Length: 398
Image (cartoon, rainbow, N blue to C red):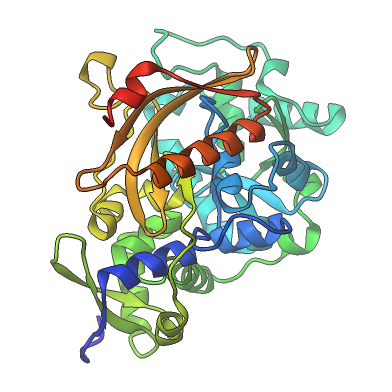
């Protein structure tokens, strides 16, 4: 950490810097630049759960409501502008970033080899046979193979061919060609990734520098741990070493937290220009996804906004404080509540199950109208005709 006096940043400005860096400061309208949007975010997390819309679609729609669910697969399969791999979780990543992902292929290949649940994976001959089939038949999904789970059928047990496909995907030998109803189709990487990007292999030091620098740029400020966790493609030690080596370029800042405490972190060289340009974000009320990048780091979320949020999908129903899939409500630079909604696509309905306001938030008629408008927009996004409120949802705010 640099030893000169840190730049002081108020809690309000810290919240606004973070929202601006992550594309949530502007009104989510205007011409859609999907490539530019994903470049700005750095990655978009993928998730299988579809309560209303899957996380990756919802995250993009939250930033530009002209986005439609069909566009991301076209962006990958037809235009080859993104590839799939791991950050902290499975994600789509701008194709231009591929050369900086070489070390991640290596790191994850080594990690997978240590995972107990991959010990049933096919050997070299079996993996080569899978690649031969893909080479001859084109992209294949796991349903094209028929090996069976070996031994005890535990929750995360997978058949050998699935383990082998995953291993080769982690290692960069296979890439996602496209998805059909979210089913992943694997192809040889040389048929998915442009030759010039595969041929370019920066040094490990270059990759670490790029990963750390670009993480900090997309956060506006953060600790070495924040930098490491952003992509999860460097270690804590590597992030700390990078920060020490770049001491002269980084700006020490002291962030005021929601609880009035302060924390010293790092910021990119242009932080003062960002501060002078930062302004109040749109006052539109937005329903954010539980896996939105602004929500994902629960500690940072609570530190900046005082918003205590937990994902409860994997918590037994009787032990949940809120609900199975509960969406945070962002208004301006403040989280004002949370809502549980569920789509019934067959019936054309968006069902509002529960609504909670945050402490010290007054639920005015104007705020209720903003929420109604956003629910209507979200219903139209997924092709639903009606928003249906359960009685309890309204009663919670009386």
